[in-house]
Length: 207
Image (cartoon, rainbow, N blue to C red; front, top):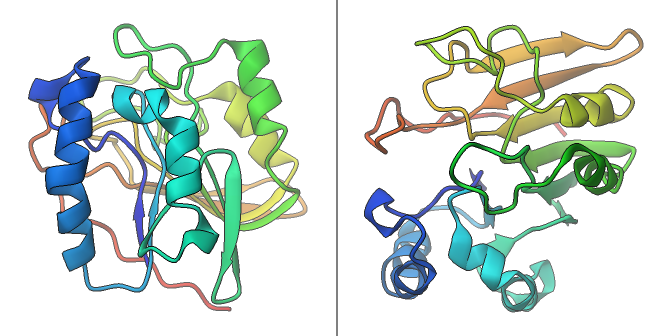
């Protein structure tokens, strides 16, 4: 299974949903078909304006039951080889790119929909204050979501994979919530100029 945590479009298409849509059909889908895996799980990010505009259509076209290799999740989930998976794309309002961005009250409402027990939670942002996972190599400011942290802290989530924060200081944090813990991973592969920083991470689940 391959997991893509959003922000899929080339930087030159920023804020051009029509170009993004053409690229999704002509480049992204053929590329996805070539990945050697059984399933590709995709959620959106705050740069993905075309996905936001076509959210409901994509949820229907690439639903888990549709039979495609690509599965698109937005406040939805699936069971895959015994793993309970749930995906949610929402982020706190960024300075410039506001697709799938919500204010605090709305974020809490979205994250309240996350099931109480999840093996793999796929998000775009990551929880804040997570041992360097949510700040960059270039500055110490915390960029993650406090609302997501609150939601994860009171749920039994084995693993959370997010992106959003480019060039994170750390890529993996084991968060101890007292009676349970969550492995949180920042899988961002590119810098703010969409230049590759590292290869995709490989993660093994024991089910």
